[in-house]
Length: 516
Image 1: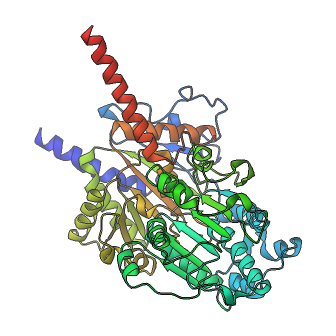
Image 2: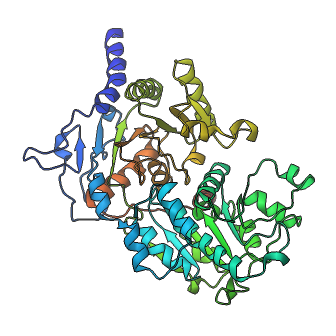
Image 3: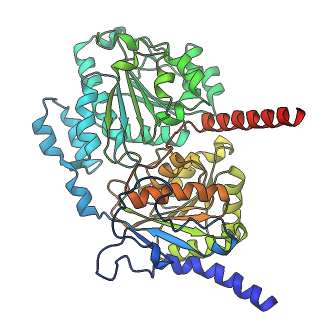
């Protein structure tokens, strides 16, 4: 009995390694590429199924609730290579010739030299001219397609033109012309670095403000000329309330990762802050403010949230055809296993990837799990950085940059590391905890397979609980039918609150029935 148990444990630890080697052929017996490869070949498919009704399509994960399913797996194969991706892009030179916008020569030079951009993605070639018109605009597109430059380029160009045509001598210190708000410090830092590179050689002055030291900024403020402020929402809100930063000349407000900023956790304070800007006068260029929103997912109640501060009928949309779809250029593996087997499987997989010089991101649902993974890997001889929202700022600051600069090849993080961060180095994402919301899965997968990253990209998902299996089945169904991912509502706190209310109503109804 003991020998049998030991054999079962060894088998479970080894099967992740077997899947990592991808011994399954990505082609069927006729040589056609498979969309989905499964341990049980009867679930393999090489083309999308027409019937899109959930429950009508056989799924490899259908019986994963059963204890005997442990050790099963399926793989959503990558069906798009870099050459195919290039065909969807537009030459930068062609874009400049076809548009009437006369961009500053330094900006174009920086695009080519600092960013090595020769082609624009769909969202960039369609979004840049739309934003430049001054309309309120939502940029909704898949992760990793260049949304940051989509709004930065026209915003900076308009500031350059405004400074040429207006006397800036009367503008007071700490009075920006544009504000870019983000939910996290790492993202604010990243956008600030992108903006500095884009504005190299121009007179645009950029200031990046991070949370965590706001009290110090309030007690000992700096006053200087600034054109663009990039900040976490909480920090800038306090500095504006205390009068250290002024908003009367702001011509554009950008909400980057708008889905997170419009989550119920932020929405009330954000709406109060946004009421400071005259969005209703955006057509009067000298006094109005333009609103831009950028994200890979959007809350379903976005209209309800924004109508408090803006006429929602004036908002234009620039939407990618790949929005809320699985990334076709990323291989996605789903492995069913016991919860207790995850650490050993993780260690085997991480060591195998590091032997190939493949940097990894490991995602957890909670900060405590992220801490545990970091400690476990470091104690097992694997150098691993840890990044989560519960860390002190002085400890957290620079962690992501260390990973980006190659000082460490493994980063253990929570969803704080999944929002907007440009992880060009990462080639493999491991979901140690599978996300319980589809929107979180989209953002995590989006850390790899980004524009400019030509290496093979893989997502490996450890599936252990019943709630995780429910989400996996929805994702597998979308992969088999070629449809949109379901229930992509980025308002996570709203979802949780609705579920709590629903549970309370059910308890109340049951209590009433028992009473009578």
